[in-house]
Length: 375
Ligand SMILES: Cc1cc2nc3c(=O)[nH]c(=O)nc-3n(C[C@H](O)[C@H](O)[C@H](O)COP(=O)(O)OP(=O)(O)OC[C@H]3O[C@@H](n4cnc5c(N)ncnc54)[C@H](O)[C@@H]3O)c2cc1C
Image (cartoon, rainbow, N blue to C red; front, side, top):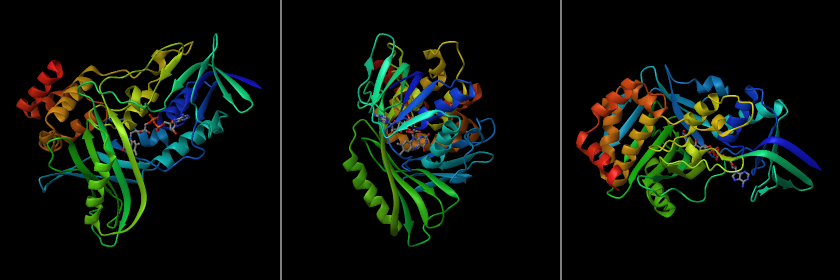
């Protein structure tokens, strides 16, 4: 049996499903998705900013947040700095709810999602790509691949975000349920290390131990994570998540023979934070319809200033990790929250760049600039 589609999307994760929904909105229907997992997993917690002037993800995705917060906290050397978010919110969503909703919308409109198939090698015939599934041969004019890379970009100033998270129930009321601990820093000269806490109630929270580092050393992250968890009188660990995310300003969309790359390793991941949700939502929303499918439809349109500032941030994080706690403290306490939320959400205005540049410590940032161009 032979089937033919204009587009084959490999990976029905966040970028694949979001792209699928956008194509449908543009009345493009001749596509198929291939996903290795049989069922949608609840293995990620997606968090991002919402508020005035920001793209309304909640409405676009028609999903309910697991929880929203109006206050965040940064902790440096034991001192706590609480920031009131005003009209802005920091919200988290379960990956299962987001992906299930996106998946439902596709299948309701008759889009085929082949689940439980691990795509390994792709064959190129004269005009088409070919995928063989059991007795079926599927011919595809274009391939859009969202599978993660096995290799990370090590070119300066790239880093990796390595983290382990546990959703826990404590025996005691240890959490302030109204305040997200965005970054509680450890002292380190080698990596940027911090704890991130999303408190769902006084006794329930997601606690993550995160390293911004050059190496990938899960044993080290897990060891510190275990120590951190000890502080919270744990009754039960209900869920865990872990990942290595790219923090790199260089993207490789790898363009050859109607083969394109999308997702975390192709420009979706924000270099200075590893966050990708908002970027993926904005990217999919901006997709233009062209007569023939082409790279311009799915390319991440880079914002030069955001990318340049991200490079400088990365350069500082990689060369002077011990300075990171102070820089993040200044970023969240001195820059108005509207500017920092817009910057972190890829929706900066000119005034936001100006205020960020003015507020950050000049000498450290200057060294970051010099390292960027010298290394
Ligand atoms: C645990 C975790 C927490 C995160 N938290 C946040 C957050 O709070 N905020 C934020 O902005 N970003 C966050 N991110 C980053 C980013 O938003 C996610 O990684 C997002 O899922 C990226 O989308 P993607 O499509 O690139 O990758 P994925 O969503 O991982 O999609 C890739 C898909 O490809 C499938 N696949 C892989 N190999 C094959 C194969 N051989 N054949 C077929 N299918 C295959 C996978 O099963 C998966 O479904 C987080 C990432 C992780 C891992």
